[in-house]
Length: 172
Image (cartoon, rainbow, N blue to C red; front, side):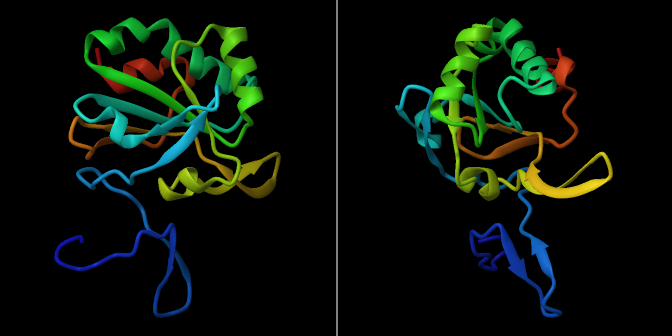
């Protein structure tokens, strides 16, 4: 329910003119519940983080320059996140094996969810049109959600600065 009106939990809805419209999450919305599998095959759900803040970040691909810079920035500041009561979880379409290798290679202290069907990614609106070298395609949008202790979206970072992401989240 949003403003007394039921809005279905779909990534895309169709408006009256039959045009696709994204059902975008906003600050103060209840974060969509999810269950995914981490690099070790362990299930991870939003409910596990009740009582803690969660940085849920979406990124395109393991071991690419931007994604590595982002993950390493979060890794290098991980103790700050812990001190301030945050958990950190990354999500991409990469396999569990790819995540495990990425974590080992860069000593990442937080879990990465494998979402090969992009269910969680789409539910959070982190899937959309991208452009690269003049080509337009659909893929994972680099986006982060800060979810409060009660499961509500506190902040959405749409324009992630990979090397400064911790500062965007914690605002020191």
